[in-house]
Amino acid sequence: MKIFVTGGRGFLGTALCRRLRERGHDVTAPSSKDCDLTQPDGLSQFNAPTFDQIYHLAAWTQAGDFCLYHPGEQWLINQKINTHILSWWQSQQPQAKLICMGTSCAYSPDLPLEEEHYLTGLPIDSLFTYAFTKRMLYVGLLALHKQFGLNYLCLVPSTLYGADYHTDGRQMHFIFDLIRKIIRGQLYGEPVILWGDGYQSRELVYVGDFVRIAAELAQTVDNDLINIGAGEEFTIRHFAQLICAEVGYPFEKIQFDTSRYVGAKSKCLETAKLQALLPDLRLTPLEEGLRETIHWFWREQEALLGAG
Ligand SMILES: NC(=O)c1ccc[n+]([C@@H]2O[C@H](COP(=O)([O-])OP(=O)(O)OC[C@H]3O[C@@H](n4cnc5c(N)ncnc54)[C@H](OP(=O)(O)O)[C@@H]3O)[C@@H](O)[C@H]2O)c1
View (cartoon, rainbow, N blue to C red):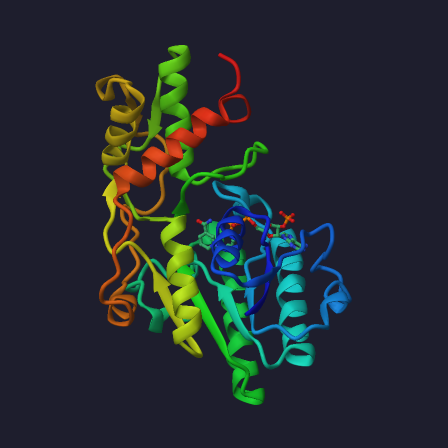
């Protein structure tokens, strides 16, 4: 198949393009330098050939408190990116199936994180604008499907982890931060201080599992929104224990700073729909995925860990 990927040089995009190419697909994945999606005519150079699938991964965001401090820019940039891809799809590539990424933070914390509630209630304040740009992307998919019969799939992933994350100093998701702190504790004898009491729970999806699931659902499911979660969550203490065991740092030395705000006590996507679609789905065990991620930290030591 001929497949176009936006955000193909990002964390998820790199893993997705690798998998699609391994499967023999003809993948076009320009960087933001070659195709700036904030520009109205950024995509016109790709009007031909016709693509069978378009994966839209590009988004302007980072983990941590980035969304809290950039709501205006996030609105302007992500609305432009999403509008331009939707418009190009409708006008130039209507035969293609558009596979978009949603976000678990679009859900209201007051409701079960089930697909039917994706547009219901209000997302949390710190992620409000980013969450709404993702909701609007989904509304765009619904609208273009309704009026023009275009075929879409919207996937809503939990936090993804794995090797080959960014090494450019940007804010990272909690699991990468946890690994970095514990390795630095081991290497440089720094105190390892984690925020909160460590009993807050989080869900992770291994990026290799996600791209496998995405590629399969892209073939088999039309015009739907599907949560992609692990179906279970673990406490920060549990993640820390596994990392300590792999790194060789004594878990007992970790300090917990309960004065720090750590967000929701628990956050886990409902995955009944995914399980019904892929009843035989087997996910990479957490220990295995963490081991690979930690090995990548060691390989990228200079960029990721800094000097002691
Ligand atoms: N990672 C997660 O845990 C997670 C969880 C839920 C949802 N998602 C969603 O999955 C998607 C990919 O996430 P990710 O973690 O891979 O993010 P990422 O590493 O930050 O990648 C984002 C990509 O967006 C591209 N981009 C940004 N601005 C652009 C522009 N103006 N024009 C063209 N491309 C632009 C970047 O391209 P360049 O690198 O070429 O600049 C980058 O490759 C996003 O939509 C995100 O919301 C991710």
